[in-house]
Amino acid sequence: MHKIFANLHFHSTHSDGVDSPAELVRIAKEEGYKALALTDHDTATGCAELAEECKKQGLDSIVGAELTGSGFGRSFHIVALDFDIENPAMKDHLEHMRKKCVYRTKSMFNSGIEKGTIKNITWEEVEEFNKGITNLCVDHVFATMKNKGVITDLEYPDFHRQNFSYRIPFENIYHDKDVKEVISVINNAGGIAILAHGGYGNSQFCFVPQLVEWGLKGIETWHADHTDENVLEAQKLAKEFNLYESGGTDHSGIMGGQYKFFENPEESEYYIPSMKYGVTKENYYKIKERVLG
Image (cartoon, rainbow, N blue to C red; front, side, top):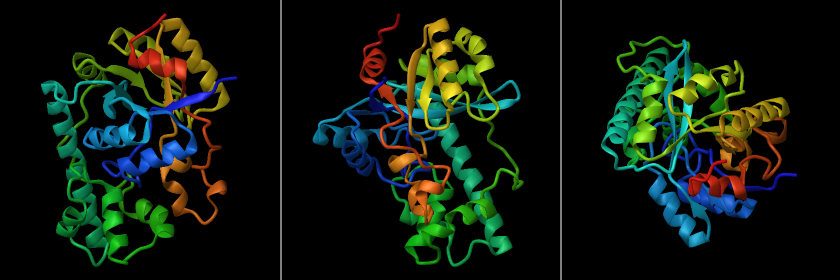
């Protein structure tokens, strides 16, 4: 029976998470994790805060981010672990994705204002309330409105569907980079490129051989969105292609922060038993110390 040691996939207020990096460390320690990697969407701005708090709390940590790439007519999420944040190509890539995130959010924000589904708030207020956050998204709009008393936690699911659905049209002037390029950026920054939640929904496991050829080094096995069958298939692929095994809670569980948006969290899609997802101590140190085989 595996024993979970580290959580290597979760999000903070620096992207679409609910808690700050420091708050997440304290939550993780109380839950029982011994090591962490913050993997905010297309940004690493929260990693320094997480690392500092991990030192205070006696937890180990590595740098992380969940990067978006396109290929084969679909979108891929590639978790980057233990990379150089100051690498020029990585910084350029993250800056491109920051511009895309803010542009998309502001476009949908303006659409919500026009429809009347977003009220009593300005974009300038969103920027002011979320100082220090570079990748402004739906959650930052919601947090600003909640702070003004315009909306409550239980209204979040409907608010998200009304204003930030992927079906809401807007002129897309910032496109995702090809997944092959994203993997290359991670590798050139000294990091480990890992396929995130590849078994979820329309499975991406069939693309693993090609992704490995392009430089993929790992695969998430124990992820909150994976079924038992997904876990077994991911483990099989990890063994076949000699890949690092990773995983984490993502938006689920106590660290996911979504519980507060539901009257009965245990009945929501985000409920998971404590300490069920992540990686073992052995797998964590394989990643950190670059040991495979």
